[in-house]
Length: 370
Image (cartoon, rainbow, N blue to C red; front, side):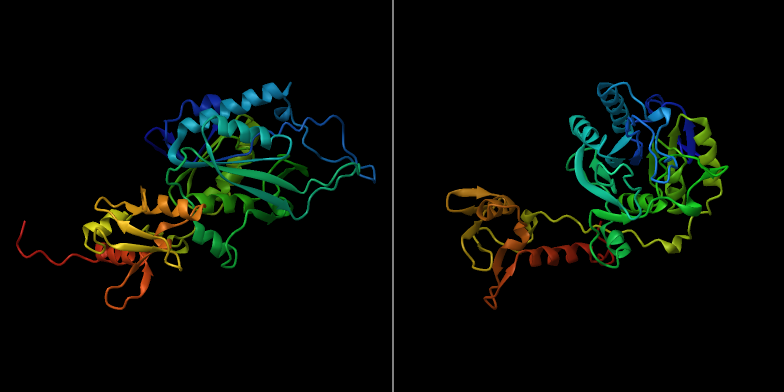
């Protein structure tokens, strides 16, 4: 299926930078990237019982130098940024070998980091040589394309997924093993196949049904499998034809998307109410006094243009609140007004909510006026 030149639900075989250049600009909602980690193993790994560890020694993970790896990272991140919508976000996963270099290049290219999350492996591979700590986690960086732009974060879904407790950034998820691990003749089909549970959390958190999820290092197709289950469109880019064949077969065997009834209704964002609207609607009047915090000091004066004055300082309710608090704070909650009938003081957020309800109330039927 293709829409506006976008090859939806397809795997594109080729180098990711070259393929990304053929996709429309600002056409993708979410990117998940699992790039080569540049592990640079110097020797084989052996267990105490003298069996060889099936570690990552693939050709695609080898680079001649750190400079070569950095150039590769800069190229694919820049190509991803071009196709990502301004409201879109990108997840990239890595280990200590590469994630710090990736993070620095992300920031150099103008991405804004929202979070990092740590995938803590419930069953990590031991450090058989006993010379360092067991590597029991990998790090994910979540970044938005444009700092301050509105992006998708399904906070309520993450909280519900976590037994109604706010989801933290430390994620305890087992390695990909058992029936989920794709094998060919008993051998791992892909050395770094990620667990579907990890992608489930990423995609559910930061996209919506119908969104387009792109994976520039598609590998065995985990992103496509989970995107299909969650009713997202997906695009995979993979240069190894063996992996392309594996991913296509795997996605084809994935059950059709869940029924629409299985998805919660989208959260409707309340209309934005500027402070000045309270003055325009007569809920506050110029010259009225506002009181800061529970102590009610200092006292501010409401100005005609929606700003407030405290002494010689003039600014927005949030700006003045930050200066008084000397820390980030929500002016809607910190500034209080006095009820003229009862004399009780309430946060001005109560007035904002009253106006919001008025705006959302259905209009009366027309009485003939145009």
